[in-house]
Amino acid sequence: MAGSGRHDDWDLTTPNGCRWCGVVQREHARRWTPPTGWHQWEPPTDEQRKHRMLARRRGGAEPQEAEAWLLCG
Image (cartoon, rainbow, N blue to C red; front, side, top):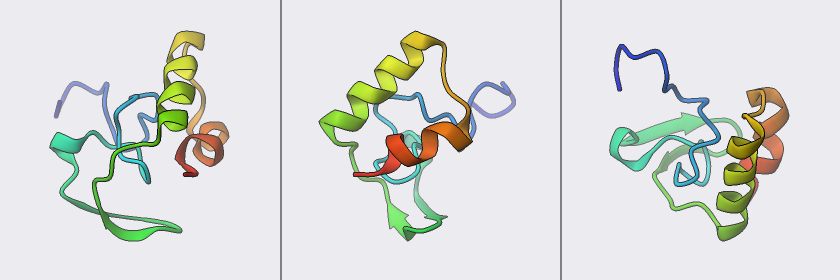
């Protein structure tokens, strides 16, 4: 969604985003994120999906608040 301003690497409320960084599979390729480092897209856990959907329902969360509980798997 380049140029839309809506999606970026920190769109953590995407339920099916990468387990480690939250980026959707189609846009992922290989990414580097602390503390995971270089990684390929991996599906999120069921718990991550649930928390991401609940965050989306609440209207989202700031990346700094969401990072720990959305990305830990």
